[in-house]
Image: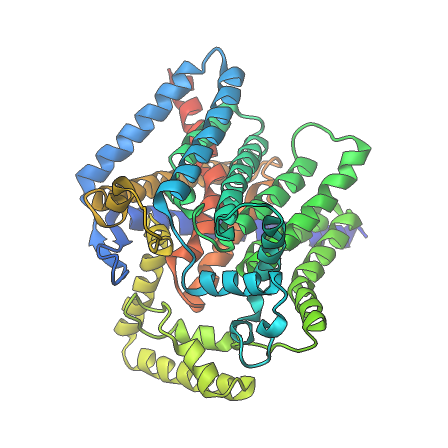
Length: 524
């Protein structure tokens, strides 16, 4: 048994050391790249993200201003940090609500493209039209992974239709997104407090960053799965970390928190399948803790979480198929997304170019035929990469930069289309005089987050040999960011897909900023 324990501990420390090193290198690369480059769209008609060399003095000056504002906030909290933290939390939540509702009323964004398809299907199901559940003649025949989001929308629309209001249901979905954004802010605020060992400065820094997070505010108007899915994710992570860090829990909460956390994490996958990457990070971290502590409850939890996350979408699909008396196709094969991720596109290398959809459609929804065509396309791309390694390097460098150095995270493109009545101020933000300053601001904010998260990891690297450097509470989010980086270098590219990983970095960035301020004060 002792030998087995030694082997387990050895595996644990090797894995933890690998994650520490890889995430440190990733954050160093992201910080350097965001310092010199940025990708954003100048023309909202084409919506093409193009590379821009940053005006370095301007961005460094903007970064300095943000740091000075934060340090003034720190300085004002010297004697009443707890009180200021509570007041700032209330102000931040009100700020999110104000801007979220302002953008709903004045931005007038409407569902388009995939979000419009999901919304219209949910509307049809809510009115009893089950014909949208069809093996060939349905959007869900191509993308059955959206079935969880459809179920969420259908439930909300059915409840909304009971009320005597003449407004379209997507308005209430946007209002719910505002509430979900508040849940994200509060959950990550608690996560920051737990990770940093109850540091008031780290919690204050997180709230400061949350108020400045323009993409989060704009995405509340996006009728899709990003905001509700991440709200469930952050809530689930908060409950898990509450079991592992902070003050001891009562026996009742010791079981209720993991149970509710399990449910929330599984629901996040139902609303957005890519959340599975973050769930896998939780499973890996939980398994690591089992190797260290040999608490078999952790192993059971990891198994239940993985099983539930893999079964939730097929389970919802079976329910709909039973209701409709019909079936759905298995959808576009995963390998088609990989093939598309190796191709050029007008929006950027590896971005959507229609290959996955057209290949599946031209194969008459035959998965085997579409998969074979995708494998042939992959071989063609690999041949081109092998023939010109320089081209391959440029291809993946642009694919990486176009996703991770877009400080707007595609938020304006996702919410561009609108009904009549968008105010002049909001229109300027999208296509007018405020567009370029907005892009620069988002890039400065992104640099602040990347650099501060790097500071946090550097501090933890310097303490890596101390037993307090625990894997589960510290590195779950970073494992997810590392997994997201690897996944989207292979998969279809889009800076919108990176946004959840950017949100995961905020507690680490806040911790890094709090640590920096504490170190500076100690030197004085």
